[in-house]
Amino acid sequence: MFKQLLFITINLSFLGLCACGGGSNATEVIVTEPIEYHYEIPTQTADGWPVASLYDNGFDVANIETLISSMKKGAYPEIDGILVAQSGSLLLEQYFNGYSQDKRHETQSAIKSFDSAVVGILRDQQYFQSVDQPIKDFFPELQEIDWSGSKEDMTLADLLTMRSGLDCLENQESNCNSSNLNQSTNWAEFTLAQEMATQPGSYFSYFSGLPLVMHRIIENQTGLSFTEFIDKNLFVPLGIVNYKFDSSPSGEALGAHMLPRDMAKFGQLYLNKGHWMGQQIISSQWITESTQASVEDGQWLEQFKYGYWWWLFDGKKANRSFSFVGARGAKGQWIILFPERELLIVFTGNKDSDAVFDIIEKYFYLAD
Image 1 (cartoon, rainbow, N blue to C red):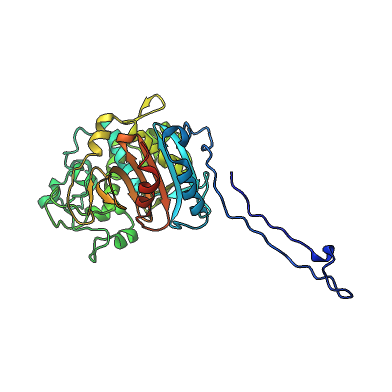
Image 2 (cartoon, rainbow, N blue to C red):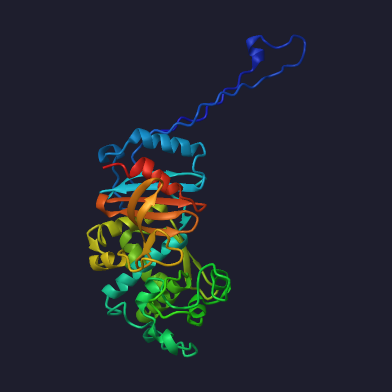
């Protein structure tokens, strides 16, 4: 429960303190109490999330109350929301900067981990047999693409691990970068038309056009649009209904906007090894395979390793060693999983920052 700002207006004329013979002069005295946050269990809704108490899960609640109070007063302004779940229950849900439980937030590139899940479902349904299959096999309609040389060797795994071999990098000064990608009519065809720079599978080169190539494969294999397939096979089973995809000029699904509770629900699906509410949505084999390190060095990785469109961290942040799996998007979008603790933390934000690691270290990771 929050203490609200208290405004007291006192008309001094009623106290006999005004000057005699003149007009009535009122003076306002404003007394403001500081914002103070007291922990409450998250609201139980019909979205399938069980809720529980921080008190029952070993957290220092007084310390967390201090954190949230400070954020309500302006600390960590780059963070728009924070949600914490452990052992399958939602324990904390707080929003800032005008966001609320019912307001969608951009996911940025954190949506790539959802894309990874969809590829796993596609394999579970036997639309392809192995991630080692060449992607050329899935594009009989793209006769204009030059598949000669090493491009014909590019596999599904090369897309998933950002090792396509294409001369593309998100922010580089060349033809194939994020700026030119954003201006293209069809992201998948723009990406596939690029020249090769290295042998596929040999070099990590992060580029957001690669998941769109996979979207096209999903559509070719299933006869459904990507949004139809993800809705039917991932979102509906998870009870995710309030979302919206951005789209390219040709109608391709790009980034998504969704409720942070649903982002957390997706993280819980992975902690549950693909199981949610009595249903195996993704095979546990894919969960394990996609969240293990496939790439251990390369530009942009720094302390991170990379799985199938998942980031893996095993290093030191904010003066503490961490090991986690994360869905990561620009401007501070995170779904962070600590499988050994059955713990997940979702951050939504408006600016890239290491503040999330500072918060994890001081307030959440120390809990046993």
